[in-house]
Amino acid sequence: MSLDREADIAFHAPQTLAEALRLLDELENARILAGGTDLLVELREGRAEARNLISIQDVDELKGIREKGGRVEIGALATPREIAGNSLINRHNPALAQAAGGMASSHIRSMATIGGNIVSAVPSADLPPALIAAEAAVRLVSSAGIREVSLSDFFTSPRCTVCGSAEILAAAIFPPPPPGTGISWERFSLRESNALAVAAVAACLTIRKGTIARAAVVLGAVAPTPLAAVKTAEFLSGQKPSTGLFAEAASLAGEECRPISDIRGSAWFRKEIVTVLTRRALAGALARAQVNQSGRNGPA
Image (cartoon, rainbow, N blue to C red; front, top):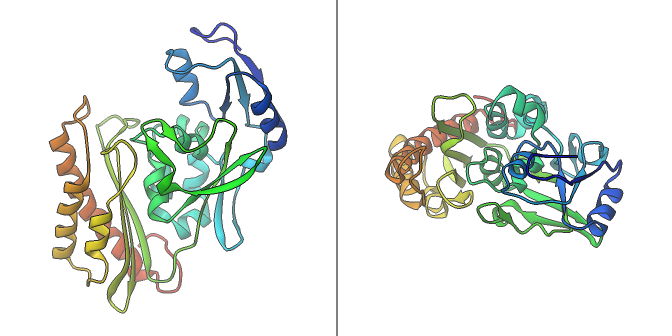
């Protein structure tokens, strides 16, 4: 395989996960290639290096979306298009379906993978906030064994994670939400359809006897990594939902975020957007929670 800035990259196409792991152990300076929508661009622009690319596109063990062991399991090769149209995802985490369905262009949604979107650890990545709000974990596999890591602990800094050089992210897993739970997602970007997020918010509420039993608010594109707004969630927990409560929580979320100023918006602007998006996401989560009394977390 040849790229403009990489004249001598060897391409490998294993058929099984075991074979992919063996190659990862044996080959020098090897990178895992899934959809390639991020990595190939980075290689071409000289922002990443590799002497070997191990394509996992033909590894069936990394495909599919299923319920297994009482949890929803999304194979690392599931595309945003598959996620957005999947009935399990729409039932148990419609916020994730929303995020996947609005991600980039139609072409990218058909090529990108959830594994790549997570492992790339780009601060503006669309899928992690909705997964973190749903208490998701990732399964990391190496020749030495398997481990699961909470997605909230997975990211360490921009483009850096706890995934080891000999590990492959095999799946994202989250528990079906309990009755009375709603999860929602809001995003703001510039006018181009495939523009990166300026800010995004995923919110999850579990309502019991008219009170918020559990709350999660996760912010995207406004910190070095996806940010769980812990103070905001603690403020919401134990209270009765209301427009006024959500407005106060939204202000807290604006204070918790840590945005930078760049070409897409100033730090001040991002804080203001987070406040608006949080209020909308909480209202959406509440609406879904109110219709989810029997365990269905679909669109309100």
